[in-house]
Image (cartoon, rainbow, N blue to C red; front, side, top):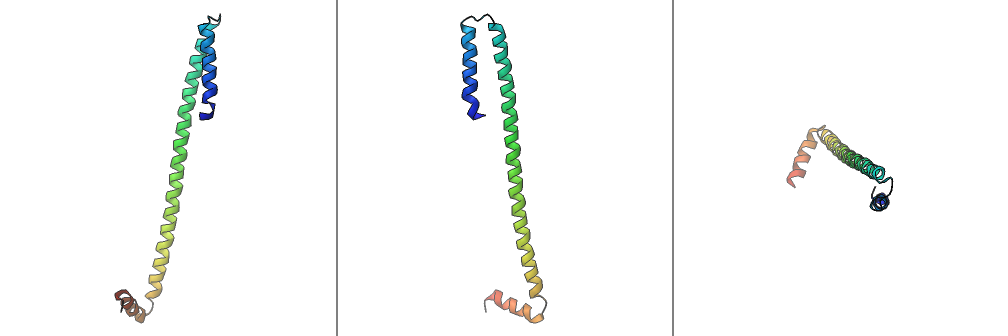
Length: 101
């Protein structure tokens, strides 16, 4: 959209020049310029809505990635806790490790 801004402006300037020079189709040119501006505004709104949707999709994908990472981390910690709790001696060893003795 931004790349075509200059082209739209040149087209609009050309139409306005024709109107200022009293072109015999001046009224039709004016109506076409108004119609073109309305269509361009509609396109701009659609473009922005699409950009917002894409931004939301990106945020969702990043959130899902972070959730998956957190779930994997929690599962690994859970498994480590289960493994440590299988033997009574391991509980005492874990307490000693925790206390730093």
